Structure formats: structure tokens, C-alpha cells
Amino acid sequence: MFSDLYDKIVAGKEKIALVGLGYVGMPIAVAFARKVKVVGFDLNDKKIALYKKGVDPTHEVGDDVIAKTKVEFTSDEKKLRTAKFHIVAVPTPVNDDHTPDLNPVESASTILGRNLVKGSVVVFESTVHPGVTEEVCVPILERESGLKCGKDFKIGYSPERINPGDKVHRLETITKIVSGMDEETLDCVAKVYELVVEAGVYRAENIKVAEAAKVIENSQRDINIAFMNELSIIFNKMGIDTQAVLKAAGTKWNFLKFYPGLVGGHCIGVDPYYLTYKAEKIGYHSQIILSGRRINDDMGKYVAESCVKNLIASDKAVRKAKVAILGFTFKENCPDTRNTKVIDIVHELREYGINPMIADPEADAAEAKALYGIEFADIKDVKGMDAVIIAVAHKEFSNLKMKTVDKFFGKGKKVLLDLKGLLNRKEYEDAGYNYWRL
Image (cartoon, rainbow, N blue to C red; front, top):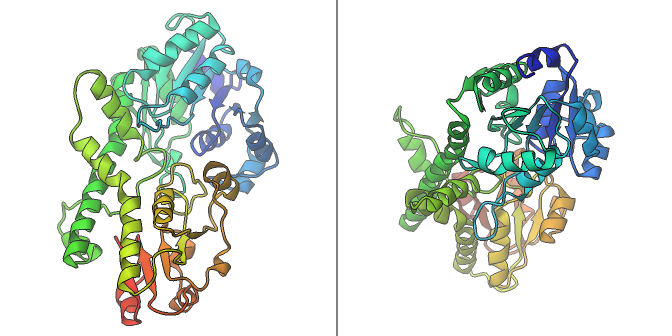
């Protein structure tokens, strides 16, 4: 029943279904649709309507690719019954108390379960702590379908490694970890992904190993960035430029090149909490992971405080100071504003009586309005400012010339916070700017 599923998919006799068509699921659906028949399912009717019109709201593959793809986009869950190989790619956020929010993956399992047919293979891609696939998702699939896992359907896990906004590290170019509940499933899952992943697949020992591998990848990055952020705080107190220090240290062959910054998004700022939550459940309290999280979670507050200190040092009144923030997305060259840490800067500045103007030509304005109540200004309207914070390294901001930046400011000392160090520090300091960066 399962051994020939791969052959049937390749022959066009069976379909692959993607559950969740966001920044991760949609590129996967498009990639597979170049080789086999694909059903792309998402609950969001508006998103499906855009895809059907040939519009890519994520900017991940572009409108031209969406317009030409053969993916059968739908918000009708019953269409899932026409497929036998299912890939679940929904977000796994955290709650306000930093505990895992498994609602999206549980909801996806419920929908898929009631449309699951015998002989299916279900692969989860969502980042979770070890055990979720087998202990949380499988019981839901069995309950909703009335089928038995291992007999009527099989499961696997293959963590997503897509990097939103990155045109180099894509699904096709990153080695894909795959796992299955048994050898037969693993072989099927591996062969299916090998259809599109040019870099090849890595067959993990079991599902829990694959889940753990994913959750530590971003935890490692989080800890390293936290170290850089702590160094930035220390060096700023010493009057030493952090980027100059990192540039010098980077000449050693084994120095890891991480940089300070705001850590938001759906992975680095979230995944560590999944690991520490599971660790707590088995009686271990994380020390290194959680300390790194605390540092990174406080960076928005630190930036706002630094802005206020620089305003004072420049003889500017803090309350009702005119401050502009350039960039609001969680990362550069990406429209996604969900889980952005720039909002922390906004909230903290408001505590000081400053209501910042925000401009971001890349961001999804409707999403920012719905999630945060933020309305963006046009960058052309950024004038007469006391301070400007370049918060995101969009290409558009990287190419800013000093004559353009000059026009952002009003009278008096120009306070410029260039968080990612996009501009030439010496050039701006020589021009009389009060320049600060992480």
C-alpha cells in the first residue's frame, strides 16, 4: 500500500498536498508542482485568491512563478482527499508566556485527519520540540480519520529550512533532513523530497532526532547572536565600535562570524522556547539557552534607551521628540512583520513620550495595521526629525546617500542610530552626526 506510493506520484497517479501556503509551504508546493501533481491548501481565502490571480504576497518566488505554476490552489479542505502524500507546513509560534502554541499544527492535523484516506503518508515540517509529531499530531489524525497510524497511514517529519527573503539558500539548495516512522516510510519520504532538493537529503535515525535537530539549529544561532548583543552592550559602554572589534577578530580562521541585532521572526526567537519548554517538562531548567533569550528579547528596549540617551547628549528634548524608524519587518528584504522586534522599540519609545514615525517600503502594510495598529509613512515624508533609527537592513536603506539622509533631519545635532551598521560610521561622524550602532 505504501511501497509504491512514490512511483504513483511520479507517474501522476497520486498527488502531493501542501497544508499551509505561507512563506514555507508555498515555495515547497511550487517546487513540487514542477515535477508532480500538487494540491495547495490554505484556510485563508484571500491568500488563495491572490495565488490564483498570479500574485505572490510573500515575494518568495515572485508573481511570474505563481502565475505559471500548476499548483491547484484551494481553500476547500475536501480537495485534500485527492492526495496521498501530505506535507504540513504551518507556523508554530509561542504564547505570551513563551510556552509553545501548538494550535496551528493541531488545527492542521484536525483538518487533514478528517480528509485523510487509507494509504497516505503525512509529513510534518513545522518546528516543534521532540515528541510532538508522534505524541500530539498522530492521536489527532487517528481520532479525526478513524484510521490507524502504522496500518492505514504512515507519518514522517522533515524540518523546514527555508530562509524567508533569502534568494541563495532555498529549498532546492539546502540539504533536507528527512525521517519516517519506519524504514518503508523513510524511504518514501526521502525519494519524494529528492525530486526537488538538489542538495540531497539526510536520513535521520528517527522522527524525534529530526525534530531535535531542527530545534537546536536556531537555538545555536540565538545563543551566538545573544553573545554578540552582550558584547555590543559592553563595548558601547567602553566607547569601542563593536563592528570594528568583530572585523579584527574575524581574521582568525575559526572565529564564528555572528553580528549583534534584533532577533525576531518565527524561528530564532521562537524555537529555543520549544526546547526549553520540553526540558522543563522532564525536570531540567535551561541556563545557557534562556539567558541568551533574555538578552535578545531585551534588545528593543536597549535600542530605545540608547536613542533617548543620544537625544539628551545632543541637547534634544526627549518628550515629543521627532523620531523616525526605517524598517519594521522581522528581517531584511522580506514583507513579513509577524514577530518583529522593532515593535519593542516602538513600545519603549512611547513610554518616554515619543510617538515614532515608521516607514518601511518592503513591509506588508495591511498586516502591520492588523497586528500592531501601525500605519506606515512614506519615506519621502520623513523630514524634520531629531533622530532616525535604521532598524532593518533592507537593500533600499543600504543604498542611502548622505544627502538623502540629511533631508530626514531638522535643526540641531543629527542623531542617527544605524542598528546594522549599513552606513559608513566615520563619514557620518566627520559630518557632525551623533552616530550610534550596535
